[in-house]
Image (cartoon, rainbow, N blue to C red; front, side, top):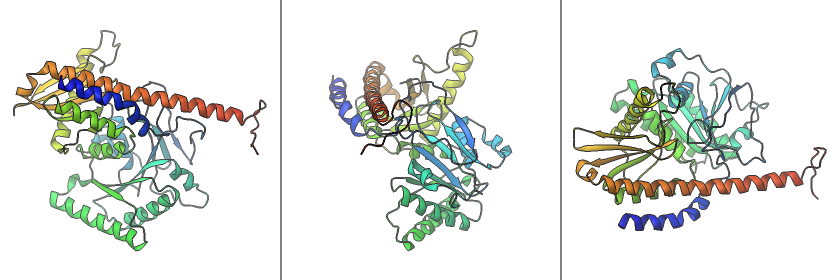
Length: 394
């Protein structure tokens, strides 16, 4: 009874919370399987129509040549094996990818080659930064990073002048070959130098977030998770729902995962342990792999992940991992004790309430987006006469 009462209280607030955290840049087709475009552009092309409500926040991948930008993108969003990235050619043109149609998270990734001077007078960097949600600057930790820090400072200061709302993220990359002490030393040194440069320029208000990453472990997925979470306007609502769910179900930790990318878009308020996150990623891989082998029909029809997807794994330390499908792109992965899992009926009932609340949050989001899309279309049609010329009202 307690869990039902709490969920009813949250459900009543969903509409207000969803509207409060709604963002114009959210994608209208989050839950659809529409065909997306992925292309590499010689210049800055393919910007969305300013009158469209389907503009997605952009994530820019920047850094010097051979710092690992393209490898990060391939491993996280294309499931490429880290060893295969050794054969990737150096990027020599801007590559843009729309990832919203293959997973729940909705944004564009722009991969910039390190040798391009995007501050050239002929290059419209203001248009690049104006629609950007996050700027990820990748620094090769195994190389001399003096030049990288100089480029980081130049990039951040220019971008901040155009768009002060950009989230600046620094990936201290390729740390797999460093000892733990050396990793901490590198991070401390880069953190100090980068912030000292900003302080010398009188830009202490610019906040840089630093992450130690490698494509050979799950650190790159965890770092990308934290980057993407900052672009999700419903994040406080999702965290609140997860907190209520675990407190009424005897669950120790819960993650809401994007199944395709293995990015967790939300978790409860308790701290995230790296080992726990790695177990979640491994569990998702196991579920998808087994479903691909045994879950499809004889003709290969269907999908390996659907509304019937569910998995239970008993670890040897009396901990149970429980995975349930939330939407066709989302999975809830929980950690709980075996004695708590004996109340599986209660957990499943609370999960049903949680899933319903999640659906209501995004139903409101889609309704708001539809209305804004219609409003922008009507506004555009009023400013355009039948022959296609634009009318500027006095």
